[in-house]
Image (spheres, rainbow, N blue to C red):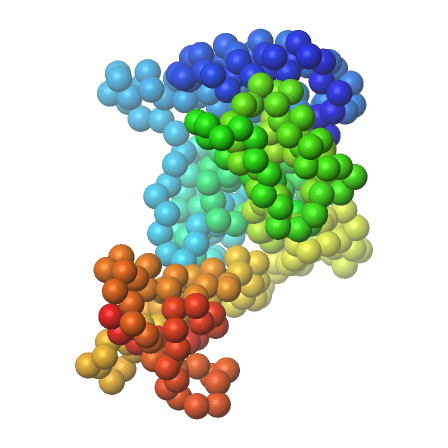
Length: 383
């Protein structure tokens, strides 16, 4: 955790908040990095700042390339129910897995670092599709991998690929370390802190849960110490003062993930899988992949569960059958969330909805805007 930063470092961090251009931000972050003491407690913060510096350098270079008529970046437009990025080191089998799961035709080669661009493909599951994106191979350095990790931050979920024929423990350990240093967590935290900068109003703290080992006054004092004068601090679940500081100077994202253990046909695979189970986050599924029998449905079902999404089918009042293609919503979504996704006019003029659901004894039932939807529900919105 980034604790005990000296006043000089905090003052320099405050100046990074005032930067308006990528060039100004780059200079201020470099200055901030030089003021961070080098010890175990600041190692993650230093790695995160180096990652941000690498991203800014890449952004500045891409702008120059575009001015010269070139292209840059690994960005892939999102399609389907969710975007899932495949991460792994060179020759881990990412291209082969992408070709097995999707309609994509990546080059599968024994030559290291064959994949140089992000390669998308659509993976069918039930009546939806996940967009899988193979990222270029990781190189084991958070600065060198800045573009790839930026692609991972923008995804809805991750698929971590390790090769059981090589140093599989080292591959997974290094990947988890790189993700953490880039501010990406694949294990869902007990709580979250969201700091929303504002133009006025001072420091306000909104708690939906509880603070652990500190008070609201401690939070305000800490945030003000970093030069933030106006902000809304949203605390959900359990959060400590370290969590608040982490959100301030090293904000992290939670990305659901599954781990793919490639080449499980090899000998001693059960023993190897147990070794991976011991080091992976407990909540992250580990899937062995066999060349002879590739289980697409299992991978699809685990992605669906990890993403916590539901399929909702809409029905026109004058139609007997619902839509064949569902709308994708997050678990816990309401009828109003559905109406807003269909059209803003429906939400503004909403009256009621008819619902067909396998979870209800009668069909249809008349429900209001706050009714929570389940996977597979059919909804007819009246406005």
